Image (cartoon, rainbow, N blue to C red; front, side):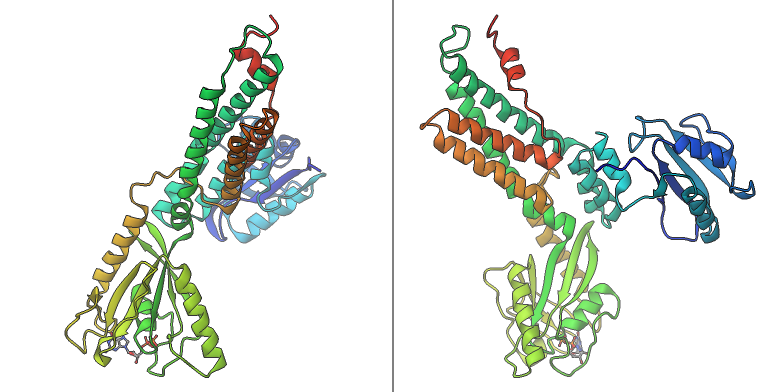
Length: 436
Ligand code: GDP
C-alpha cells in the first residue's frame, strides 16, 4: 500500500561537510517547516532562517527552500534545509523532524519512488538518475544523462504507440470490415510498420553489450603463466599496490579487481591465478576461475615473461593483446603486440593506449540511446518474441496477431513503467470515421 507519511532524509553526502541538505516531502511538509522555522519561505526562494527544536532552542541557521507540489521533485510539497554539515547539527535536525506525527525517515529510493508514482519520472528516467549518482567516469555520466533525459523512454513509447495503432487497425478491419468508411485492406502498410518496429527493437537490443560496457565497465583480464608478471602489471596500471607481488609462483589464487578510467570509460581490470596445471586444490580452483573469467572478458592481456622465452597463450575467440613482460631484462619482442616493464614503467602508456583503442573500436560510433539493464533487455526480448509471433500468426487468423501485438506493446510499456490503458476505440475513432 502507498504510504502517505511525510518523509525526510539527509540527501547530501558523508558528514561532516560544509553544507548538509535534508529533504522533506509529503502532505505536512509545509506545516513542519513552519513548526521548525517559524514560517514557510516563499516557494522556490532560498531564505536564511533559524531552525528550532521543540523547546524553541536554536538548532542551526539554515537556508530553507520550499517547493509546492506538484512542481517539486516528488510531486508533493517539499522542503530542503541546507544546514551546516556537522554530525550533531544533522542529528538534532533529524530527531526534530522525527518528532512530528506521521513523519518518518525515508526508505532508500523513496523520494524517487514517489516521483515515479506521481508521474514526475518514468522507470527508465528513475534508473538513469540512480546511475548518475554512481557514475564515476565521463561516459557513465553521459549514458545516465541519456536515460534521464526521457529520449530513451520516448523511443519505447513511440514503438508501443505504433504497435497499438497497428492493432487498432487490425481490430477495425475485423470489427468493421463491412463498413464502407474503413479502408478494405490496411494490412500491407500496417505489417510493414510492425516489421519496422521489430527491426528497430532488434537493432536496439544489439547495443545491449555496448551499453553494459559503458555502464558496468569494459572487462580486461590479465592472463598468463605464474610469474609472468600479472600482479606487477595490475599494480603498475592501478598505480597502487593492490596485488601481492612475489617470485613464488601461484601467489594469486583468487581474482583481484581494480577499476580504471581510460579515456572517460570505466575499465575493470582483473588479475587472475597463473594458468598452469597444479595439484593444489585452492590454486586449481583459482585457475578454473581465471579460465572462466577469460571466457567473458572483453579484452584479454595475455602476458608472457620474455626472459624465459615463453610464448604468450593465444585466446582465439577473445579480443586479445599479446604482451611481453619484463622488457627491462630482455630485448626483442617478436610475436608480441607490445612489450613492457612493470618495473621501469616502460611500455605501460602504450598498453593503456592499446586498451583505449580496442575499447573505442568496440563502442565507437554507437549512440548512447542504449539498453543498459537486464530488466530493459528482458522486456525488449519479450516484445520482440511477441512481434515475431504476431508476424508468424498473421496468415492464420486476425485475432491471433492482435493479441500478440498487445503483449508486445505491454512489454514495451513495462520498460518505462507506464503501461498505457490502451484505449483502442480512441485510436480507431481518431483514424477513421466509423459509426458516424
Ligand atoms: P604473477 O605471478 O604473474 O602475478 O607475477 P608477479 O607480478 O608476482 O611477478 C613475478 C616476479 O617477477 C616478481 O618477483 C616480480 O618482482 C617480477 N617482475 C614482474 N614484472 C617485472 C618487470 O617488469 N621487470 C622485472 N625486472 N621484474 C618483474
